[in-house]
Amino acid sequence: MTQRRADPPAARRGALARRAVERGARTEFLAFRMAEEIYAVPISYVKEILKLPPLTEVPRAPSDVMGVISVRGRIVTVRDLRRRLRLAETPSNRRARILLAELPVDQGGGERVGLFVDEVLHVYRFAEDEVESATNILGSELAEYVAGIGRQQGEMVILIDLRPILGGATDKGAALPPALAAAKGGG
Image 1: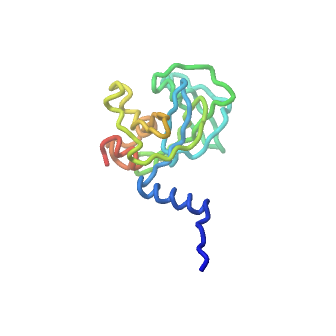
Image 2: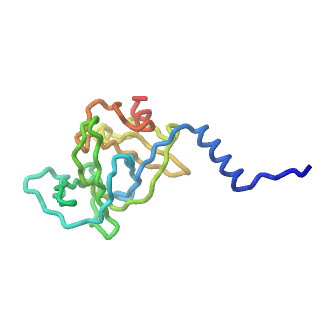
Image 3: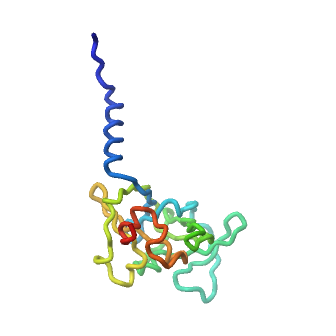
């Protein structure tokens, strides 16, 4: 009787699948660069990524409001995350993007907001054990905006909680993706 050897790619897929089950559910985050640091937001909140269109300034708007844009006939407020997080500002370049983000209605969302970032990078998939709480690391001023720190393959990614930025729910543990809820102490 002839013994068949396992197909190496199939064996690798099987090993990857076993590791994925062992690590548990993963949450996807869209990573971007601001002020030479890597940040990320839950990808489920990002509806679209835009190149920087012409902005219309809004008189007497808060300092983090860059202006408004029209997206398919809908007026969208654009906020500069660097200003909101009190990061160093640099001149925008051709890699700058606007993330059209929206919270689900059950989290106080429904309004799309543009978030200006220096550069969009890629998607990370974090398991709960790859996300650490950031409350002891960061000052109290920024703690409300940071949901945790993701660590994967030697990289550290600051995970942003969009609810306070987009005007969402006040209950800090409500309806967050699992990896963020665990980091915020809600899971």
